[in-house]
Length: 219
Image (cartoon, rainbow, N blue to C red; front, side, top):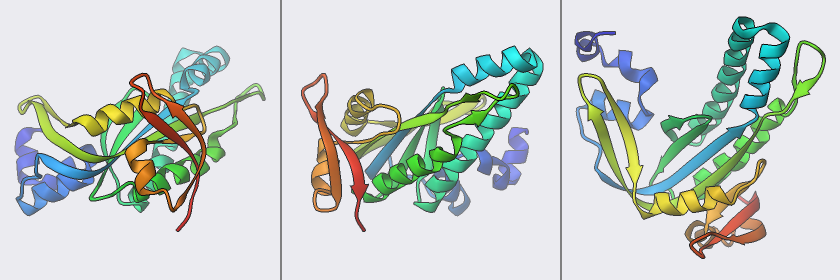
Protein backbone atom coordinates (compact mmCIF):
# COMPACT_ATOMS: atom_id res chain seq x y z
CA UNK A 1 0.00 0.00 0.00
CA UNK A 2 1.40 3.40 -0.99
CA UNK A 3 0.86 6.61 0.91
CA UNK A 4 -1.00 7.96 -2.10
CA UNK A 5 -3.43 5.03 -1.94
CA UNK A 6 -4.02 5.64 1.76
CA UNK A 7 -4.63 9.32 1.15
CA UNK A 8 -7.22 8.51 -1.52
CA UNK A 9 -8.96 5.71 0.36
CA UNK A 10 -8.85 5.84 4.21
CA UNK A 11 -10.60 2.45 4.28
CA UNK A 12 -7.26 0.89 3.33
CA UNK A 13 -5.95 1.94 6.74
CA UNK A 14 -8.78 0.41 8.73
CA UNK A 15 -7.13 -2.96 9.57
CA UNK A 16 -4.08 -1.16 10.94
CA UNK A 17 -5.69 1.48 13.16
CA UNK A 18 -7.59 1.55 16.46
CA UNK A 19 -11.30 1.92 15.59
CA UNK A 20 -11.57 5.34 17.23
CA UNK A 21 -8.50 6.60 15.38
CA UNK A 22 -9.94 5.38 12.07
CA UNK A 23 -13.30 7.01 12.82
CA UNK A 24 -11.55 10.30 13.58
CA UNK A 25 -9.69 10.18 10.25
CA UNK A 26 -12.91 9.48 8.34
CA UNK A 27 -14.67 12.38 10.11
CA UNK A 28 -11.71 14.70 9.61
CA UNK A 29 -11.25 15.36 13.32
CA UNK A 30 -8.31 15.01 15.70
CA UNK A 31 -8.46 12.80 18.78
CA UNK A 32 -7.64 14.77 21.95
CA UNK A 33 -4.24 14.10 23.50
CA UNK A 34 -5.84 13.98 26.95
CA UNK A 35 -8.64 11.56 27.70
CA UNK A 36 -10.37 9.70 30.50
CA UNK A 37 -11.29 6.03 30.37
CA UNK A 38 -9.97 2.56 31.11
CA UNK A 39 -6.98 0.64 29.80
CA UNK A 40 -6.94 -3.15 29.48
CA UNK A 41 -3.75 -5.19 29.06
CA UNK A 42 -4.11 -8.86 28.10
CA UNK A 43 -1.02 -11.06 28.04
CA UNK A 44 -1.26 -14.48 26.38
CA UNK A 45 0.94 -17.29 27.68
CA UNK A 46 1.72 -20.65 26.09
CA UNK A 47 2.71 -19.64 22.55
CA UNK A 48 6.41 -20.39 23.15
CA UNK A 49 5.71 -23.95 24.24
CA UNK A 50 3.17 -24.39 21.43
CA UNK A 51 5.67 -23.13 18.85
CA UNK A 52 8.38 -25.50 20.07
CA UNK A 53 6.02 -28.49 20.09
CA UNK A 54 4.68 -27.82 16.59
CA UNK A 55 8.20 -27.28 15.20
CA UNK A 56 9.33 -30.59 16.69
CA UNK A 57 6.33 -32.52 15.37
CA UNK A 58 5.75 -30.84 11.99
CA UNK A 59 9.11 -29.33 11.13
CA UNK A 60 10.09 -25.68 11.15
CA UNK A 61 8.09 -24.57 8.09
CA UNK A 62 4.83 -26.39 8.71
CA UNK A 63 5.14 -25.73 12.43
CA UNK A 64 5.47 -21.98 11.82
CA UNK A 65 2.44 -22.02 9.54
CA UNK A 66 0.36 -23.87 12.11
CA UNK A 67 1.35 -21.66 15.04
CA UNK A 68 0.47 -18.59 12.95
CA UNK A 69 -2.97 -20.10 12.36
CA UNK A 70 -3.37 -20.74 16.09
CA UNK A 71 -2.28 -17.20 17.00
CA UNK A 72 -4.70 -15.71 14.48
CA UNK A 73 -7.55 -17.74 15.97
CA UNK A 74 -6.79 -16.56 19.51
CA UNK A 75 -6.48 -12.90 18.57
CA UNK A 76 -9.62 -13.03 16.41
CA UNK A 77 -11.58 -14.42 19.38
CA UNK A 78 -10.23 -11.89 21.89
CA UNK A 79 -10.64 -8.89 19.59
CA UNK A 80 -14.18 -10.03 18.85
CA UNK A 81 -14.92 -9.80 22.58
CA UNK A 82 -13.20 -6.40 22.72
CA UNK A 83 -15.33 -5.09 19.85
CA UNK A 84 -18.48 -6.26 21.61
CA UNK A 85 -17.63 -4.14 24.67
CA UNK A 86 -16.64 -1.07 22.66
CA UNK A 87 -12.88 -1.21 23.19
CA UNK A 88 -10.09 -0.36 20.76
CA UNK A 89 -6.79 -2.17 20.34
CA UNK A 90 -4.13 0.51 20.74
CA UNK A 91 -1.07 -1.70 20.37
CA UNK A 92 0.44 -5.16 20.19
CA UNK A 93 3.59 -6.07 22.13
CA UNK A 94 4.85 -9.61 21.84
CA UNK A 95 2.00 -11.87 22.94
CA UNK A 96 0.03 -9.03 24.55
CA UNK A 97 -2.47 -6.38 23.53
CA UNK A 98 -3.18 -2.97 25.05
CA UNK A 99 -6.78 -1.77 24.67
CA UNK A 100 -8.56 1.52 25.33
CA UNK A 101 -12.13 2.10 26.55
CA UNK A 102 -13.04 5.76 26.17
CA UNK A 103 -15.14 7.41 28.91
CA UNK A 104 -15.22 4.18 30.94
CA UNK A 105 -14.83 4.14 34.72
CA UNK A 106 -13.68 0.54 34.48
CA UNK A 107 -16.95 -1.35 34.28
CA UNK A 108 -16.90 -2.11 30.55
CA UNK A 109 -13.21 -2.93 30.58
CA UNK A 110 -13.60 -5.29 33.55
CA UNK A 111 -16.60 -7.02 32.00
CA UNK A 112 -14.59 -7.40 28.80
CA UNK A 113 -11.64 -8.82 30.74
CA UNK A 114 -13.82 -11.46 32.40
CA UNK A 115 -15.40 -12.31 29.03
CA UNK A 116 -11.92 -12.71 27.54
CA UNK A 117 -11.09 -15.24 30.24
CA UNK A 118 -14.26 -17.17 29.41
CA UNK A 119 -13.38 -17.07 25.70
CA UNK A 120 -9.87 -18.41 26.37
CA UNK A 121 -11.37 -21.59 27.84
CA UNK A 122 -11.76 -22.80 24.24
CA UNK A 123 -7.97 -22.61 23.84
CA UNK A 124 -7.05 -24.21 27.17
CA UNK A 125 -6.01 -27.47 25.52
CA UNK A 126 -4.85 -27.24 21.91
CA UNK A 127 -4.51 -30.71 20.39
CA UNK A 128 -1.16 -31.37 18.73
CA UNK A 129 -0.51 -33.74 15.80
CA UNK A 130 0.90 -36.46 18.09
CA UNK A 131 -2.26 -36.45 20.22
CA UNK A 132 -0.84 -34.48 23.15
CA UNK A 133 -2.11 -31.02 24.09
CA UNK A 134 -0.61 -27.61 24.68
CA UNK A 135 -2.33 -25.02 26.87
CA UNK A 136 -2.88 -21.33 26.14
CA UNK A 137 -4.06 -18.84 28.77
CA UNK A 138 -4.19 -15.12 29.48
CA UNK A 139 -3.85 -12.77 32.39
CA UNK A 140 -5.66 -9.43 32.18
CA UNK A 141 -5.12 -6.17 34.02
CA UNK A 142 -7.41 -3.12 34.04
CA UNK A 143 -6.77 0.42 35.27
CA UNK A 144 -8.87 3.54 34.79
CA UNK A 145 -8.35 7.27 34.93
CA UNK A 146 -6.76 10.02 32.84
CA UNK A 147 -4.23 9.29 30.11
CA UNK A 148 -2.18 11.11 27.51
CA UNK A 149 -2.51 9.78 23.98
CA UNK A 150 0.03 10.42 21.26
CA UNK A 151 0.84 9.48 17.70
CA UNK A 152 4.58 8.81 17.54
CA UNK A 153 6.92 7.88 14.72
CA UNK A 154 7.91 9.05 11.27
CA UNK A 155 4.83 9.69 9.09
CA UNK A 156 6.65 8.49 5.96
CA UNK A 157 7.48 5.15 7.62
CA UNK A 158 5.17 4.25 10.50
CA UNK A 159 3.18 5.97 13.23
CA UNK A 160 1.92 4.30 16.39
CA UNK A 161 -0.72 5.11 18.99
CA UNK A 162 0.80 5.42 22.46
CA UNK A 163 -0.91 5.84 25.84
CA UNK A 164 1.01 7.34 28.76
CA UNK A 165 0.53 8.66 32.28
CA UNK A 166 -0.07 7.54 35.83
CA UNK A 167 -2.95 5.25 34.80
CA UNK A 168 -0.52 3.24 32.66
CA UNK A 169 1.91 3.02 35.57
CA UNK A 170 -0.83 1.58 37.79
CA UNK A 171 -1.77 -0.81 34.99
CA UNK A 172 1.82 -2.09 34.78
CA UNK A 173 1.97 -2.58 38.55
CA UNK A 174 -1.30 -4.54 38.50
CA UNK A 175 -0.28 -6.68 35.52
CA UNK A 176 2.97 -7.66 37.26
CA UNK A 177 0.93 -9.24 40.06
CA UNK A 178 -1.52 -11.13 37.84
CA UNK A 179 -1.33 -14.86 37.19
CA UNK A 180 -2.66 -16.77 34.19
CA UNK A 181 -6.43 -17.03 34.29
CA UNK A 182 -6.87 -13.93 36.46
CA UNK A 183 -8.32 -10.45 36.04
CA UNK A 184 -6.76 -7.79 38.27
CA UNK A 185 -7.70 -4.15 38.86
CA UNK A 186 -5.80 -1.18 40.20
CA UNK A 187 -7.14 0.14 43.50
CA UNK A 188 -8.85 3.17 41.94
CA UNK A 189 -10.91 1.01 39.60
CA UNK A 190 -11.70 -1.52 42.32
CA UNK A 191 -13.03 1.29 44.52
CA UNK A 192 -15.24 2.65 41.73
CA UNK A 193 -16.72 -0.80 41.13
CA UNK A 194 -16.84 -1.84 44.79
CA UNK A 195 -20.62 -2.33 44.83
CA UNK A 196 -20.54 -4.55 41.74
CA UNK A 197 -17.46 -6.78 41.98
CA UNK A 198 -16.47 -9.77 44.04
CA UNK A 199 -12.80 -9.64 45.00
CA UNK A 200 -11.08 -12.95 45.65
CA UNK A 201 -7.78 -11.48 46.89
CA UNK A 202 -5.79 -8.30 47.43
CA UNK A 203 -2.11 -8.04 46.56
CA UNK A 204 0.44 -5.30 47.10
CA UNK A 205 2.55 -3.95 44.25
CA UNK A 206 6.24 -3.12 44.50
CA UNK A 207 5.21 0.52 44.96
CA UNK A 208 2.97 -0.46 47.88
CA UNK A 209 -0.27 0.07 45.99
CA UNK A 210 -3.08 -2.52 46.45
CA UNK A 211 -4.22 -4.61 43.48
CA UNK A 212 -7.55 -6.48 43.43
CA UNK A 213 -8.10 -9.93 41.91
CA UNK A 214 -11.66 -9.96 40.56
CA UNK A 215 -13.86 -13.05 40.66
CA UNK A 216 -17.18 -11.69 39.35
CA UNK A 217 -18.86 -8.48 38.20
CA UNK A 218 -22.59 -7.97 38.62
CA UNK A 219 -24.79 -6.10 36.15
